[in-house]
Amino acid sequence: MAAILVAGMVASPNLCWPQDLDMERLEGEVEELKKKNEELERRMENMEADEEEDKYNLGILAGMVKISGYADAELRLTDSEDENSGFRARHLSLFFNADVQPSWRLFSEIEYEDTPFIESAHTTDNADTIQGKIFVEQMYIEYHPSVNWDLRFGRYLTPAGIWSIYHYPPYVPTQTRPLMIRNIFPQVADGAQLRFSHPIGGSLLDTHLYAANGAGNPGRLDRNESKAFGARVNYSMDLLDHFDVGASYYRDKDNDDVTGNSYGAHLLVNYKDLELQSEFATRYNDPEGAPGYTDTGFYAQLAYDIGKWTLAGRFDWFDDESIAAADKGSFRYTGAVNYHFAHNVVAKAEYNRNEFGDSGIKDYNEVVFATVINIGDL
Image (cartoon, rainbow, N blue to C red; front, side, top):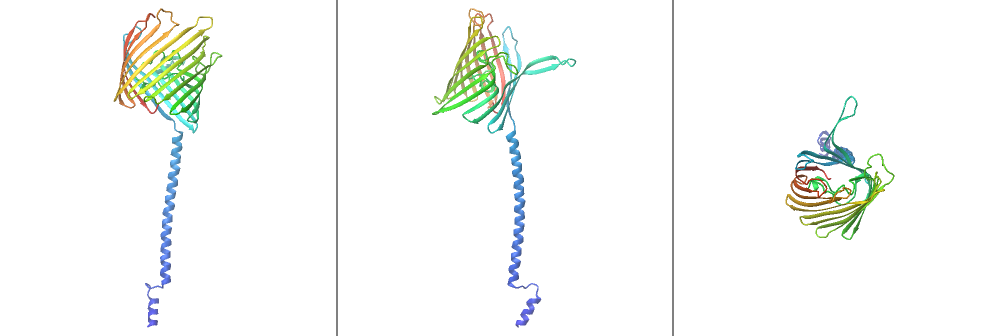
């Protein structure tokens, strides 16, 4: 019987020893592990490819220039003897901002005002048609190793008061700026600026110190030997909802040998939906070989937000003593209404009453309707 059983097991292809069964099972498991390993290798290769693509895309994003800006168009109606009513495609301003390295940044603002058009005569290349204005309002290289301080070198907005810095049409209620703006402190400065911020309890002290070529000397040449310098200090605290108070100073000797010392003070108060903004500034002008004179200006603006609506009113006054007249003060009374279709689309309507005392200029009224839109962060 034993011989018969052994002979049958040898002869049958479907029967094997226990050792053979274990070997087959192990071979099957090894084959299955090989397949899983190949699948894991394939997945790893795909992950590495995706990671390389992500690194590439992140590198592109890190080196990308961020573009933002704003545009506005308006209809201005006036009864002035010196101007006509009409439409105006006023601003197209483009901002270019790039973080070149963690501590280095390039920023520029290019303004195209009144739809510039420049064409030359083809035979001479001399300008045949010129209209509008192209203006590089800002262009600076910034070193910012810390949130508390940074250094700018190039062209920047002159740090003075509030309106000169935060003047962009999407964020101010009127298309017309206060009378004193750009008449006491210059609009821009070419030079170097140091900004330092220091927290004091729950408040913040922000300071700007700067040196520049001076007014009337943009671009390549400084047309006089003197340099301008100035400073701005702003103290911000959580009084009411927000409270800013500060002062500005600027000294310059211009190309006509007139030394000017400008002093300014500003105030910004927010309480719920109400905002009060005010500035006072004066400049003492000291010409060589002539009597000195003073330019002085003031404005106070009150704005109130009601849902998508903003109501604003402003009083302006500016006195230029260089004008020979008995009463040289200029006054403007402004009322404005804004409607915010979205956070970056605003419709404006404003009324201005302009009065000039005894300066010889006839008083006039004007109404301005405007639409303003911005892209990105200004």
